[in-house]
Length: 362
Image 1 (cartoon, rainbow, N blue to C red):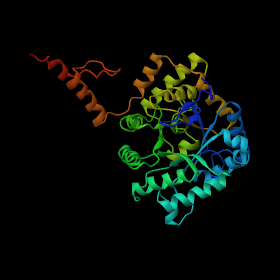
Image 2: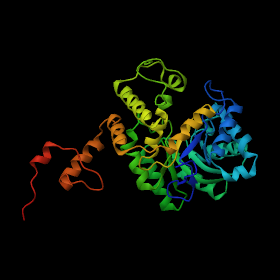
Image 3: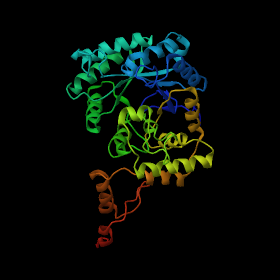
Image 4: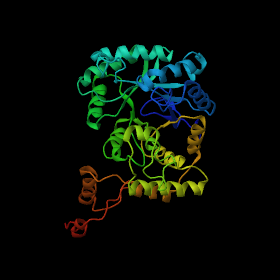
């Protein structure tokens, strides 16, 4: 596999690379990103390697990220045609103005025009709702997004960081009213964040949304630079978000296993972690956030890594998320409905109840 082993995003005709170039690190305005020159080199390297999918947002590095992409891609018509550019709205880049935040019609139109100007393009390939706006009626947002698509300024739409029930409500309304539906779901997903598997991933599979995970290395924790020897000493984005913390035994166990598998393939723990998430059900393109060309090239190596079933099972077991009502009840339902028989690859965990169940007598 390579960056040119394109995948269809959701229930659409949009073809994207299996690794998406995340642009939250474009610009050093937030204190830990790449400067404009290094960001330009990363974009050009990604394109030279065959990548076609880049993801940003209006708020990233105080909208410097969009401006960098515009300078490198937007002003080159042939390159712009080749690339799939995604950006987001909902967060406020106009402090003090309540009508330029959220997902209302006015906010959407205002932010769309500013993103088009910064990106130096007349259309957005994929326009994401950055996060759920609990103040704006969902119907207003979906109707406004549909109008943006009909205007030609947006090609496809997606949603990021929202509850499964709200996304399902919006998607159903879009189908019922013949509005443009979502084709993508952007969520945090990694070996250290698997709670999305309970409701969001199954919802995406059912409703035709291609998943584009963000933070697949958990802010760098799975990159290979954190281990037992330097536990409690963190820097970069993870420290900015979480402060000084010591990793738990579960986290360290996952890191140990990544190191072990990486040594077998003569690759990096980051490549192993990326390969794991990029081959999960429903995942179309994993967003990589990097600060240097070397990190980009290291991450691209994940497209050539094929983990064995045993290695995947080992990582799955070590990273198993907490049991929730739904995940626990799924086993019980499978026992009650099918008597513990394996169906479509799912076999419930053994339970005392199963031993007491007897086949019906007729």
